[in-house]
Length: 197
Ligand SMILES: C[S@@+](CC[C@H](N)C(=O)[O-])C[C@H]1O[C@@H](n2cnc3c(N)ncnc32)[C@H](O)[C@@H]1O
Image 1: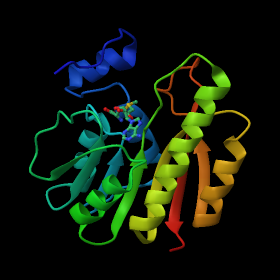
Image 2 (image 1 turned 180 degrees about the vertical axis):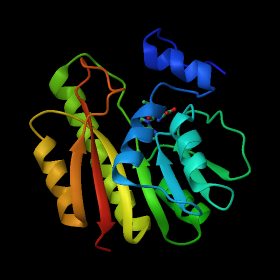
Image 3 (image 1 turned 90 degrees about the vertical axis):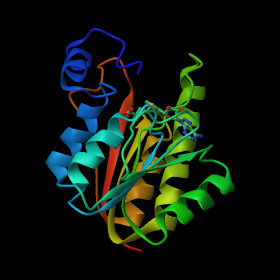
């Protein structure tokens, strides 16, 4: 287990509390504020490796819930309630594997997916928007009416387009930059609840 690398206070806290990434506190804060992910639910976690968000989702869904964890990289959480789907979310075969693993509509789709950073701001922004739109497309295919989503996207020219897409698909939508998100990072999380179906 590689564990969180840097030495900031969220990384230290994650190590101390046995979490795989400092990113756990972003999802934990959003779920608390917006009361997302309840006991017994099924959650699809896109861009799940190494598995920090999966750990948080498992805590929230309890013994009767489950998590479908999707990434090209391995998931380091070993738990019977986790189904790992290894693949690139932009490929239809991966979406089909999620549908098969879910076996029916799911309650929540979360995405912490990020592109490999090139250092070119507008290129990284555009790639992040593409991943966020892909996550929203997957959410619209697998969510039950009334379901919820949390999707990461980098700020930039196209941000408003993605924000508006969440507003069209969900009766409630908001953006949040959780405390654990680094100041220098342009990432924002879009929250959609009450999927219109
Ligand atoms: C910030 S990390 C996720 C950290 C995770 N939420 C956690 O708490 O452990 C972003 C992940 O998105 C994944 N990712 C990026 N593009 C992807 C794609 N097209 N399909 C699947 N996963 C992707 C990367 O492999 C990486 O593991």
